[in-house]
Amino acid sequence: MSTRFQPFFLFLLFSFPALAGTQWQDLEAVRNGAIQFARQQSAAQPGTVSVTAIPLDPRLRLSDCQSIDFFIPTGTRLWGNSNIGARCNTPSPWTVYIPITVSITSEVVFAARPIGSGQTITEADILLKNDDITQFASGVITDVRQALGKTTTIGVAAGYPLRIDMLRAPYVIQQGQSVKILARGQGFQVNAEGKALTNAAAGQIVSVRSGSGQIIKGTAREGGIVEVPF
Image (cartoon, rainbow, N blue to C red; front, top):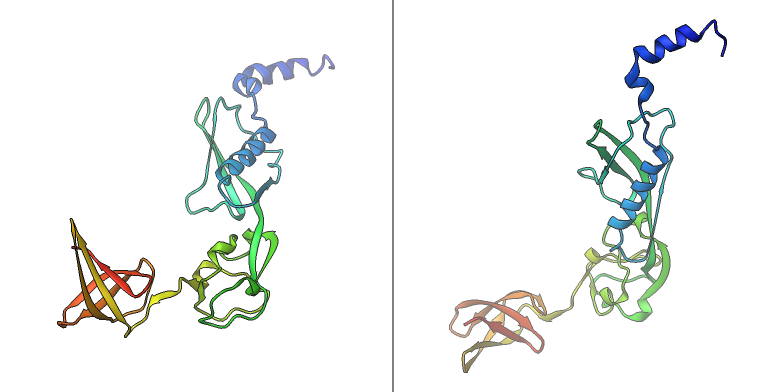
């Protein structure tokens, strides 16, 4: 260094000791930490999770942190394009947000052919394909057992992914059907006849009018049986 500029340089160095001695945070470590955190938080998702994040702006100056706390910002879901927060409390507090992309590759259940509303799903109606489920609306079905035997509530076009909200369990009791009312207690059982006032799938609550005209609520079971607590 030219001796002509040495006094001015030393003046800057010793006049701003905090600036001269600052240790800056490794931004790539922050980015990698955010990726690792997002992978951990997404571990329970079906299929293979992939997380990417763009590098932080190299002009960003953050003081070196002893312990970084990663978090999911309020209202954020780790799904597709998202963000991870990184917070430092000591020695100098700072907070940054890292843009990330979460992809989840899994088998997805598609309609193999047009399916009408009220139709019961069979193996011939479905097609399995690997795809990024974050590209679809929430509730997309990834397990065929969630679809087989269920009944559609709307029509589904061929090649369209099936969702949970499109299907319902088949009714085991139909409105207007004659049912057997079954009440069990400690060491006894009472049977009666009634008529269902609503539709119900197995395990759902159904309203029944007894032979005496009383309205009773019970749990729908296979075979036209309604279990009533006693």
